[in-house]
Length: 334
Image (tube, rainbow, N blue to C red):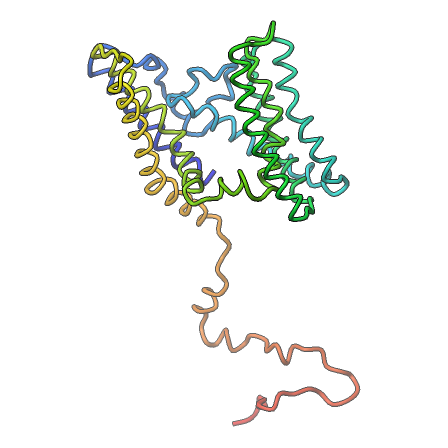
């Protein structure tokens, strides 16, 4: 929550400002302008707006915010889930935990096979809960794995194969969807558990690429980019509709799209450095344990003098000489 809520709160109000802007400028008000209300505002500030809706379309003023509301529900659920996962992990081998993680992510796939659609009423609920559970089980499995260097290197190669395979399958299913399953690409979700596990346990190849400074920094700013990109995209779409801009296939159109992406990336970098990271540090400081060393520095000398001496606190034999330090001074001396 310390990482997501500050950026979420800022982008929420940016989205609100944009909606109000479209009401007074131009002739195309935002399509979600009729959703502005005090109840909606309170729900979105508290990250609960999705909990009352079967579909996430239109649930949030900033498009991607629906997933943050779903994640907040999963975070609260995790307080109970972690107790169950810890019990299971104590009595289960790593291999069995991996299979349990795969099984946990299957319910959304079964719903997809039953309906042919990935997006159905309340489908977001089993999706976030079960995939969150699968991730927790996968984490417990990785923590129990004891792999040799050779095995970890193989896991790295497997992760690369899985990553390439997922991309290839997505292209194939998009061009040739399965009969009666319009959202066939959703079936690749089952491969994400082994992909995450092999990335976490592997070394070299793809894990090494993802651990470079550029990729790590990209991971740092990724959440801010996720939250701000829809605002930039919405503003661009409104501009094209407002002024009748039509992009034809050309280098100019490509450079324009590069510029739009650059604006989103710049906004993400600014959000990360001036909102996300300072906000994370600030919120974590609220629950940080007391600094006992700092407390000791501000204690009066009288209180410190009454602290027990670790040497005198040692257990002494009942029979035989006591161990008294050479520089010990009797209490009545002086």
